[in-house]
Each structure stands twice: as structure tokens, then as C-alpha cells.
Length: 119
Length: 109
Image (cartoon, rainbow over the protein chains, first blue to last red):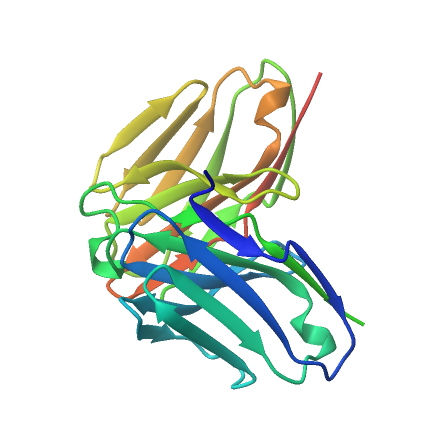
């Protein structure tokens, strides 16, 4: 069973379109995250939700809107896609939130990534 | 702002050799992580270092943390081809967690 699963794995779309990436974790974790990995492999956090509540919202265009229907799901919706949105997007989860990360040897568990290409 | 710098960004080494990857960070933190990423794959957690002087080893990889110097190292001993991947360090501080740019390691026969 995949612990953190995200779909689709590949997403190719035209500029201006609206698309969604879905993420689900079956680990019973309280906190989920979205990261963006750019072409230089640099990972940046975008959002973090703890028990469906937004905890971290980095400087991300408001075209990006996360939605957490329950604590096992965190979907990412992107409006009016731009060329610069092309990247690999990773979903992740942890048992608790930021402040607990490391306190009990807790780790982040990552999904396999969604490669988004905007043409 | 928490900043994380890794070096080198690219590392090509021969099998059997030793090398060290460095991770410097800018503000106080005592939680540091090392991750491995294979091409086209997700990140795999390698080590979590919690306190000053922490050292963890698994196989040919050993990670250490010096919180006073704000430095972590990932030491590779007698490299083998299977270690070829990109290695990321990540530092957490309260509600902030930052990844380094990654070190792309290639181990050649």
C-alpha cells in the first residue's frame, strides 16, 4: 500500500487552463504539505495543513489554492496556469506538525511527485 | 529567514573513494534531515539529527550535526554506484522548514 499517493503523475496542459493535483495519505497523519521542486531541484514549501487547518502559506500566487476536505487529503488547485508553474509538485505528510518534526524522530513522508508541464 | 546551503551541488566520484557533503544553515535549529532522491522518484528519508553532536550511520553513509557551527555533514565511505542520487538536507525551525538545493552525486566505476 502506498503511504502518500498523488495523482496524476504527469500533467501536461496549456497556459491559462485550470488543473488540480490530488493527494491522499493512509498513514493517519495529522499534517500534510505541498512542495514545489523547480528545474534546479530546489524544494520549496508552499502550504501546510494540520487537521484541515491551514498552518503555513508561503509566498505563493493566489492562483494556487489548497483544499483539505479531511485530514487524509490535501488537493492543490491551480488556476490560470503559467509557463513558470512547470515543476514537480510533491505532497508530503507527517504525524504531527512542524514543531513536532524531529522531536520524536518524526519524519516527512513524500508522495512520488506530479510533473507539471505548462505549454 | 532560514537559509540552507549545500555544497557541492555536483559531485562525481570514483567507486571506493570517500567524500563529504556539507550543509550550512543560517539560524538556530536543532532539527536537521537528510533525504535521498533518485531520478524521477520521490524523496526518501535517510537521517534525522536532533541535537548537537548527533551522529547517525547507515551503511556507507554517516551524518553528523554541529548546531554551534550550524553545520551538518553527510560522509560517504567507499562509495558504490548504488549511492548515485541527489541528496538534500533540510532544516526545521518552529514553523519553518527549508531544503537545500541538493547535491547530485554520481559514482563512477
